[in-house]
Image 1 (cartoon, helix red, strand yellow):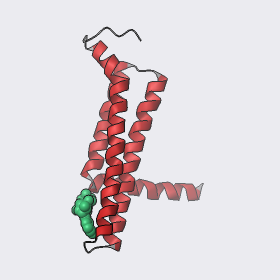
Image 2 (image 1 turned 90 degrees about the horizontal axis):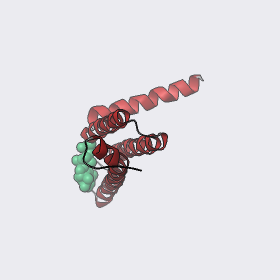
Image 3 (image 1 turned 120 degrees about the vertical axis):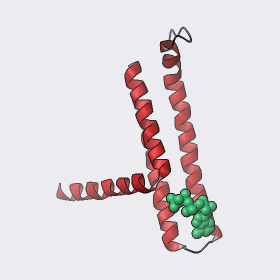
Image 4 (image 1 turned 60 degrees about the vertical axis):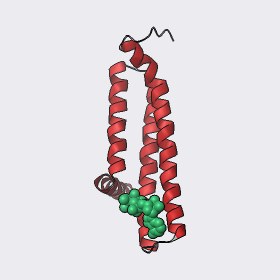
Length: 125
Ligand SMILES: Nc1ncnc2c1ncn2[C@@H]1O[C@H](COP(=O)(O)OP(=O)(O)OP(=O)(O)O)[C@@H](O)[C@H]1O
């Protein structure tokens, strides 16, 4: 139990570091808060909650991994190097792909009930 708490403390410290230093991480957290608040207001199904929470967690985990790779590259290759560029660029691409996928999931899950709530369409499904 003590080892678990100690590991959790380091993990929270890593999360706090990413929030403090990464503008994109703050953006992802803000977007996740907006999505989950909208889901709560709309009263979506349990399956929809699972999809939305999964999508948010995957994007935040990807951004944390990207931050870890950036810091490792900065440590290992403070000078400019094509491999350092490739590592940072591909890690950033991974976040982009996951963020785009999460945005599509958000639109598919929240779009129809939101449009119905706003009176834009009759939604019978
Ligand atoms: N050591 C390096 N060698 C070659 N290219 C690099 C190197 N470091 C960064 N780059 C290039 O510059 C881009 C921006 O990197 P930079 O570290 O400035 O910002 P970042 O990756 O968003 O990290 P930070 O969180 O520090 O702002 C990278 O995606 C990469 O293309």
